[in-house]
Amino acid sequence: KNEVEQSPQNLTAQEGEFITINCSYSVGISALHWLQQHPGGGIVSLFMLSSGKKKHGRLIATINIQEKHSSLHITASHPRDSAVYICAVGGNTDKLIFGTGTRLQVFP
Amino acid sequence: DSGVTQTPKHLITATGQRVTLRCSPRSGDLSVYWYQQSLDQGLQFLIQYYNGEERAKGNILERFSAQQFPDLHSELNLSSLELGDSALYFCASSVGVGVSTDTQYFGPGTRLTVL
Image (cartoon, rainbow over all chains, first blue to last red; front, side, top):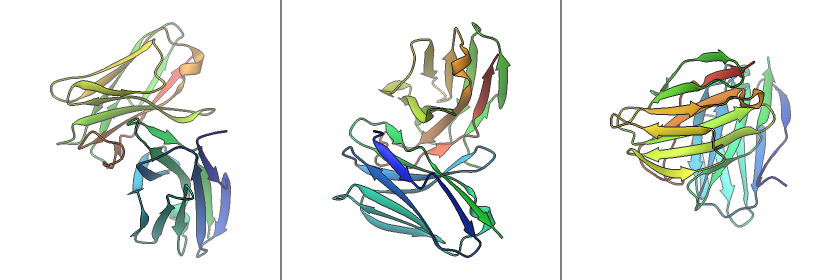
């Protein structure tokens, strides 16, 4: 079993829909990162969080440390949100452990 | 544009060869991280340097080595290349030393194809 599991693996949505991507982890962590990888391959860091909730524009990330679970929400989804979303956890070992990613396609 | 640059963008080489990938971090960032992304393994951490010193090591093969120079740019050397080394190699940088405290900024990646 992977230390970081994401669900779903693939997600399709219509423009305007509310989207949720989940991340569960089995190791102790100090922080969790959400990354976005565009079809061209470039990776952008969206959030780094260790507790509670963060919001940036239409994106919201939450984490529940007790349940070892994080969610990434996208409100009012748009075709430009189509990308792979990757969850990564950082613990005491100073290295990130990555989930396998969730491929999101938003259709007009 | 993250401010992290990587060269070359694409590299095609043959098995058994040696290549060098180069990364320049964002201005002011002291940490450089190297990652490998292959189709079957996803993103994997290889190695981190902080201000010229090796800071953390991940699943880096003995055939691979890296260093960070005084001007803070970094190079990843891959030798005795095998077909399975074909992947995207990303460099990222951050201000500080901790994956738990610092946002990482990723370069555009180098796509390595080993034939």
